[in-house]
Length: 485
Image (cartoon, rainbow, N blue to C red; front, top):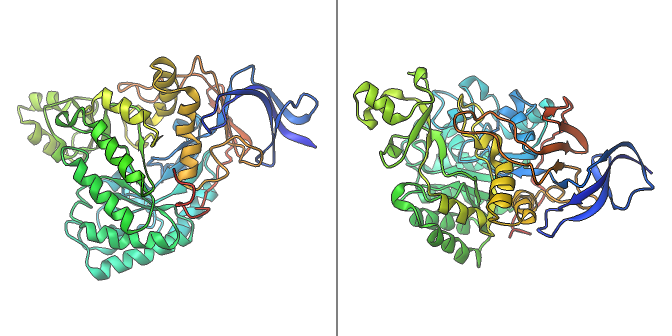
């Protein structure tokens, strides 16, 4: 057989957490076809890895790239990190199914402009992704807030039984079309009025297909234990695996509680499938939430529709210039986005290192001054946290970005280097790999990512997209309760 590609002399880290081994790897028809000594084999293309690390393409489990994969399909912020698959529809906000009859609810504006929401059902969104053929693969969750928007006249109240039933029908249809599950963002104003019972009734549909429940908790601040209890109650009622999104101890009064919070996860995980994702930074980013305005830590405005000239400035400095209180200044800036430097680095490290934790970027691609996690999260884990701080081994870092993520979301042919698996691959220099994106200059390409293949196609090399995009939509392949760990 003449292979499509042979990568010779690689240090293969396969995603299982096992140590690296030296081997050649061959691909054919978008899949890994052979691994071992292939010195006698022939291929259409040959690459000498020169001893660099070859890993499965990284899976970004927490993104807001729902519309970017269609409108900016080259996906440079992601492919340049070695990311080959993105999971969209997190935090209760998804691009589909969505029908707008009024204003775009906050925080759905994190995804795009009102005119961008043109997918009234999941099937049309899936088709649009495949037609755009982005540079990365795409799998999707259905947002609770998106469903509420479709069926409620206002979002500052609990849904009625009839509204919940309409949401259930739309969720069931989306799951039938291959959606991964349901996400919620109960901390946001557009969902905080929903009751636990509302979400439980909606989540019941997940049990029909073995789909997943992911949640941006009702609070990540002082009452986080109660918020975790609510999340576990919903997931256990629905008999659905639970993934806690971007787990953190938010707010200065919460610093140092990561051990308590992780213990809560561990106890629940003994009897129910539970995990979390985490981004490798001690600052968060979202819309400017008046409930989070505080003088305890720096808040930097990333954009403001009413005062765009204030983008990039600290809220405290803006308030001082305007001779207003922090809260009054925040109100004047609305609608706006912000970066909140509200976490302890020690907590971030403890959560990131935990065996239940996957890596996700939570990047906001339409933000004019995005949090650097959009461009740097994955190389930051490889370089800063694994190599430099030795928080965990390189094989463990890669496992958190590949195999664990694929297994939890049922992407059985992704996140692993094995014969028959999809040829999503990243070649990187373990000595040089690092994030270059900063809070002041966030749109910077990572260092040390040498080449990225998606479905066997070279898509990024030498800090440049090749222009050949080979991503596709990935539907849910199985009951996600099977193989979750």
